[in-house]
Image 1 (tube, one colour):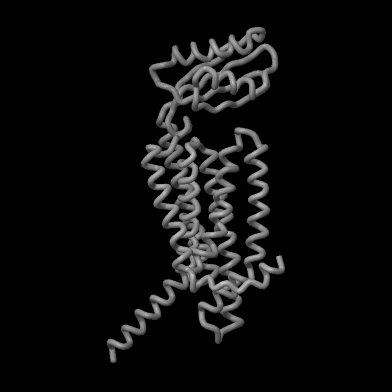
Image 2: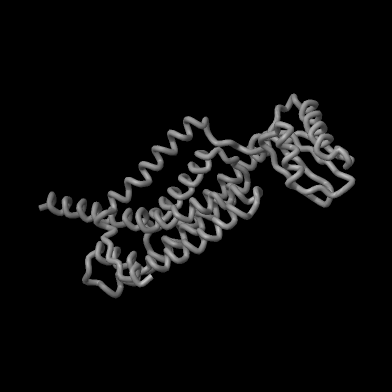
Length: 306
């Protein structure tokens, strides 16, 4: 940690090298998106069939999940309440009879001594999926607008607010891309995870911007590049320790948290790393890049007036 404290890295001078990393990642993930044929949406967004079943005797969720998977139902959600289970699966709207037959056969095979009763069976239409998609988009839109307003008000610079949102978009889009890359389902849990990543990302960025603002007041004679490098190097330890802590917890959830939280923890692992990267190597360098270009334009305009 003392080594991290004593670092004096020229982040500003190497900013264009750091910009290449997300560009390369975006290109690779776009290629993966095309090859995969787009995201694998869950029943939350596509619609499907919902079946509610009950057992006379208690049954472990993992055993039910294994039986449903053995019936050839590859994409499904499972919820439990006492001895009752709700199975939601992406399935052909015209295949209700086959779906029921497959589930019956699988349960009779795996739970022959435990009577199973189908309590209810109905379709979940795509209209629900459309509604959830709109709500998810509204959630991101209002979150982004709120963050821009907050950062702009706190640091008295709309530019800093826009730069922070560019960093968040970088984290969210790349995290979603890595999700598509491994073929995981996109459901409501994914939306929650992406919004959580956005929150972590803006937190790191605000801490860095706050240190920059302090140094701008204290070291008024230093140039902007020196202040930025000093600010990043001074908060690097804090960012690394915080992110490593979240990363360890996310890894623990990924390996031992069970299947239900597997996708959420996967996004948190990817997003935690991307969040640190965007705050240090994208948001602040973008502010600097805009600043030097603005000064160059003003200098050119002054020269032309002469």
